[in-house]
Length: 371
Image: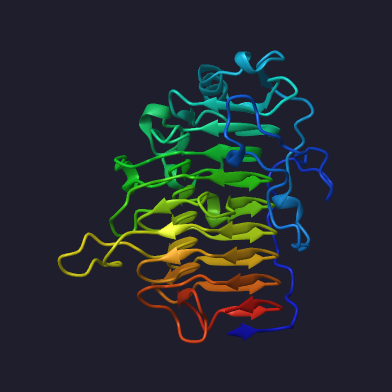
């Protein structure tokens, strides 16, 4: 068990789009079960209610009071998969008018961000669930996918699209069998541009069951503009038994060569179910690391602050976190957080239960409980 009490200095953070003041007017309200939807997929507020780490401007929700386009016209029936796909393709600030009650939109096709969009903001107002029905990935962005328009000669390092997901639930996404770009990303797959997730929930998402590196039952990210971090704020991944993500690696989040800042969030009851680790041991398919988070690369950072990670499991290494900086320049910071009951069936770093870490010096743990 490791418990520390020292504080941590705030990191310098790069601005990301138009943001609201610290108390965002678009914060989601109470979400009650919608007609025809499962009560288990609807909850009040996502994120960690005990997390009070200040949220920098770069990580706050975007003001969507003047949307570019609105999906629906006041009824649940008017909010369809086709309209979501069309709106995402066209880009801009997207909101929903699906009536007063929460609604689940079952996606018939994966919504794809086109690379001609400067910014795509999807705001569910705390009442919209996008469901993959256990059959398909929900959302896809890839600046190197020529079918979505080739806009630069440096597709892996372009500033746009800026994708912001806020006040949404992503449920039952499934990327199993999707091998392009290495696969993964059961609910959301992003390569290139920039990504931010605020006030959102990810429930029962899935991706490939085996394989080294493939991962991210909820979210998979490859490349970000100028190596800026992905911000995840006031969001929940899993949250309760039976609601978590399942993938070969990274039961919630997964990346290669990408940094993350996770603030005031909950990552619990997710599982890395592959077998054989990475590189795969002989006669095994590989995988099984990072029950909650799997990240690999070189000069990458992972910051967990004001966050609770519990009951995540890995068949191999890192029940909570698997962090590998191949050139040993990357850092892991855990601040004002609780990580507990995250078993690693195979291996973990001595003195840091639930964590497998290779980086620059030891993990930087402050004012946190790791046990």
